[in-house]
Length: 352
Image (cartoon, rainbow, N blue to C red):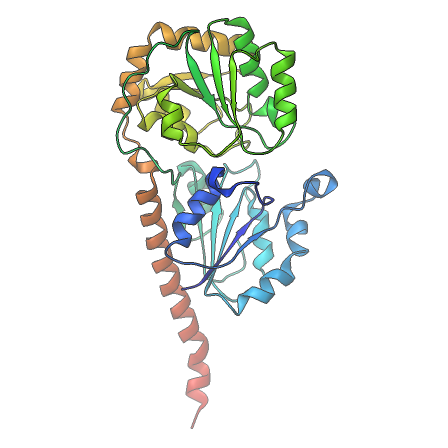
């Protein structure tokens, strides 16, 4: 079965460091097909409703509709479903962030299915008339075994971070707050995992913060487990719910390695971390609150580490993710087959 994969973001510099593309690669291994990036760039185009932006790309779908068996859309806005209004093949949709404030109307009657990150979002969509909605929180490549306890480092604790894509995300992803926390804690060392964008901007921030000797910037593709072996914790503190996926791969990789995390309340993973005692959750993100979070984390580090070690991360792992989509594809194929048989029945009855 051939599937076309669509991403409403722009093509990233390195697909190996993009969580959504890594999840798509899990599915492409079983159902190969072309990939298309629909990102229209920044500026005014980003402010237009997704349905309007989708209308400009419909010729792309029409060209591929006859060549593939299924369309699979990865998006942070269900308004992009309008892109497939004239398509005949079944549609799979992966909603990569939480639903916004307004619940959209379901697509016109046709074979489609939607995978969401949060269980409450699945309930919202079902209540709004969406059919075949499933919960698929993440598809992370998790370490097979925990790492040994990190050694004390010369200048204190280490942390790792996933980077922003835009200048605005230095604030909304908590990068500026993390650098401010490092200024307040002279013992704190940071390892920032970067990915080929905004290198000059982050270096400028590090220099202005006078943290050059305490911030290690990793620009190349790296072995994440090797980096985590040198870290005490992973940090990701967005200020809003829809800035990143609810269950970031970087935090899941850290937890599966036995490293606690520092995260903010908007992330869907936050209640689980609190319940397991596997890290510190912030209600507000600033340099001061992050510095206080590090105080709490390292004052009781072994307890938080035990919480991370006790947490079963398999529901967010690649095998569970693949199984969800296998079942969803089977149901979608059966529905599409029934629809085709129903459509051809009148023609068959009219034959002599």
